[in-house]
Length: 263
Image 1 (cartoon, rainbow, N blue to C red):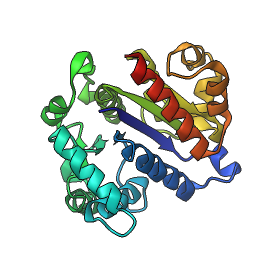
Image 2 (image 1 turned 90 degrees about the vertical axis):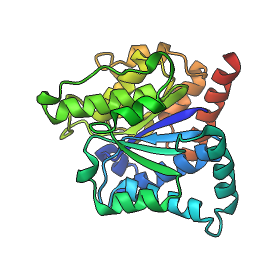
Image 3 (image 1 turned 60 degrees about the horizontal axis):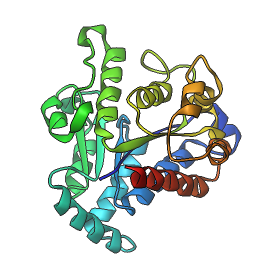
Image 4 (image 1 turned 90 degrees about the horizontal axis):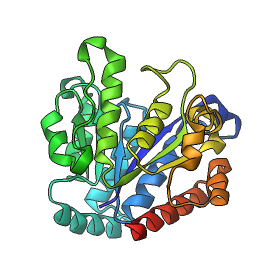
């Protein structure tokens, strides 16, 4: 089953073109809906906050699991797919903190999702993560925990990249200042995708770290524009410039299907 790593974060540029943090959260939910409905898995690396995007993702997972009105078809689809893939969740959130540090809301959301959503700590859950990763990317580069939070975040992003097997990474927005870690998280995840030869899709129309990555050689733009992701040059540029999320999702889906046919 194809996995889609979602790396989406608010930024000042996005707000200037009309997308505040709540609207960015809705984009994340829409991405999850879109790819789950196409029999794919979605993977996040977002922190849990009461007002954060994972709260919104969890609410969606809970509605799907309960078969709430409007979600009946999706719930049945996910249950049948869940049987096929065994213990692999359809929505996976890998977090840098230990489970003891997670809010009760996070743990309640996981419980209420009916197996649709699983939250795994990259610090404590290495055994579980090893069960989920397969193939040549099974073991990500290990971080030095004594180096602190930056190293933990890098290790988290290695794990998520290893889980995209097969799979791709989508990037949108992202802070360019005031970020945690050794570099903007969106940039690090984009760079890891390229270095591990995972298809990468940049939605640069929302600005932020994603646009900087795709426009600046020092960050990795030349490598991105040469890497294979199933899209031609013109369509890839269109994807990079658009702020139409529905159009972007259709383009990404076309790229994924092209890659699948080529394997």
